[in-house]
Length: 117
Image (cartoon, rainbow, N blue to C red; front, top):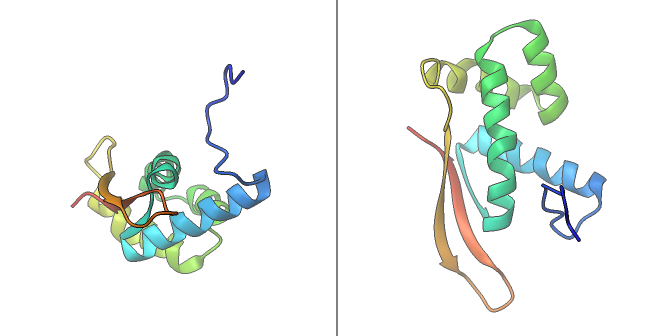
């Protein structure tokens, strides 16, 4: 039974999941929109929204927290410079997930996750 188990495993071990979320979050921040499966998009949304909330407080500590989660200086710069300024007055809900439907026989339903303008 899955009592009190909140995260999706996505068929991966913990290290693989952490690496996947890092890569997806980095791509989302740099490109401001990516296409992935619905399950991955639903897991990515709270991960990225926390990073945006942390980066709105433009301090050295917040930069270090975001750097530890993203592992990319370019992504940290863009998150603190462009994206955090864009959502300075917004209290949450920085991303949207748009379902795109089924792509192939073996691939699940796809979705586009992007930042709200």
